[in-house]
Length: 434
Ligand SMILES: [Zn+2]
Image (tube, rainbow, N blue to C red; front, side, top):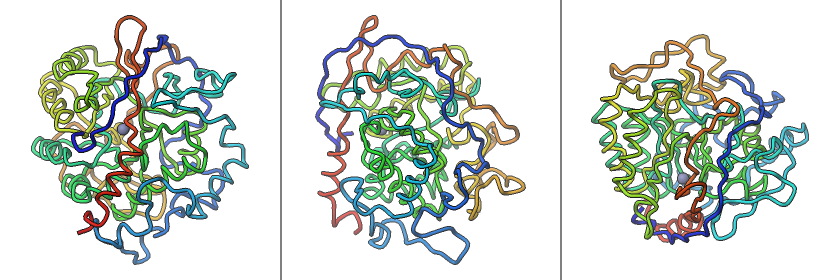
């Protein structure tokens, strides 16, 4: 992220116990199509100001002043949250759907910690930063499948990635940052309209989400969903990936109960996001070594590799590894299409019709995307997308950490993208809508 020249604060090394997820589900694992909300009076479709499609509603063109109007610029503002969002949060909390656990704290960008008495591996907290796995979250792909997804876009470096994906008839899921959509509307348009890729949520300002209050979590997710909704003809994302993979029972409950989102993490981490940092935690060579190990290794489970469209270097790390994905026989699928279900809550994919209801209400699924090529598809049969089995390690890597020797990790700061994005938005205000 050359433009986002973040200051990387190398944190103190912390002992990181190799942990195995062992906790039972505390969230409802609801398949697509089920009513996720506990009452029928606040479906997710009603949460967005422009409302459901089908009533002659039009959306302003991406990049126009009308398009960006009404959205917070620098921070995920909670002072003017739509009432419907707050009402949905309060209703979910009143129904006992939002666990009452404290916010974590992150000092100098270090991994969040909880107050004394709250074990991040306990069923009550179940922190994904600590590698606690909850059923219903996606950590890995079905056997033989590599899920293509990229975080932190849209950005200038996205151009090269999108050209490569299109040239190879591949589709990916883009976990986008809301403020980056405002800054780079043309890249967003390319991802969604030209490439017909899948759009998912990566929050508005890229914070450690477990450090945020319930209202702040609603703001981070809600503003991003609304901008995606308004920029995709009314589509409502079905997936989100918390920045740094940082979620817990409270945060994932808000994402699911208020917004109907499924949480996505990963089972392999390239650390590619640090390649453009002042102190990279990896090298292109190291990434290719890791990629070789993963792509030539066992195909069970399938791969969900954390990759970023953050910098030319991170994009290149994917492009360099791509031939191995092909030569080793991996089925490449956009992450949002792993289970053969819908990409969005109210549309099967980025080209199919948007409906004012959940896709599960439709009788039949339309053909896959209009421009799809003769790639293997998971659309003909439901492929179970599972979390790792209890007791099974999900990854040898730590989210955005650098595994050194043995059990010692160097945790690094968050990129503090909140501040960075804010600064960029502020600096670019007035020019991005030109
Ligand atoms: Zn990210």
